[in-house]
Length: 300
Image (cartoon, rainbow, N blue to C red; front, side, top):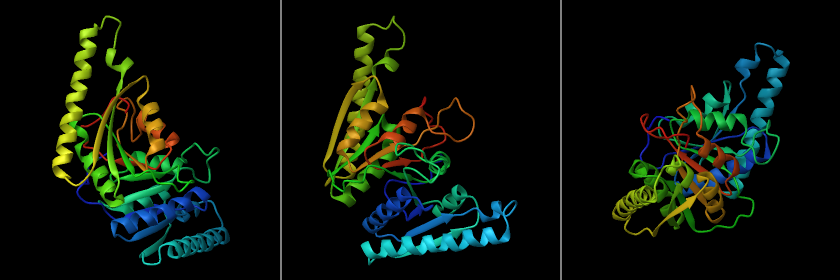
């Protein structure tokens, strides 16, 4: 994901809707996020009528347009009811929904999508549009999950590795400030991945662990200097699965912030295996922050 944003500023909020209940919930969550940021909300329905025109009748295209505009009006009314002071605009996108959302977000906006689209077959699965939006985005993307209870934990969780995650953590810190929440930095040391082969000695393992702690400490101290009024907690945990530890930790967070990485073994935009697991199984919304092109992880 190309790096285009800074954690020192939070852009406008763009949410994609498609008529599904998860998308509706995502729009209402996005409205709360826009209100916290003091930014307008832009609601987008990407109908792809231009693409459908190749095989659908004029009457069918018109029905899609009418239904899409009715959906946008309905969502806008629901947003206005819950957030009467929020400025909300709507857009009926004639093109591909993924491209419509990326274009609407521009260089600074944050895209919000539901955890499952109309084509999803289980509540755990992120829809194909959401996956493509997240994988190809050059701006932050939030996948809204785990908001059914409405209870807030007062914690923003940031999954970190080393100092290359500084922009990601800055973004998380700004989110924590807006929520008047604490920021928890969580570094997960994957025992199996770190050990490598069976010849690795215990001294080597200790050296790896100490290096991880040094990275976490440096990152934590930097954020505390930049955000002196923010409560910052830093934890390092060992585990067989990075994603598994973060998913469990997400039970006690209002938002999980991660750097978006692509797996280098694949061609084209894609999510790494840890990120892929989190957007499918997190217990809270997941915010993916774009990275510099040279910051590829090994499947993160």
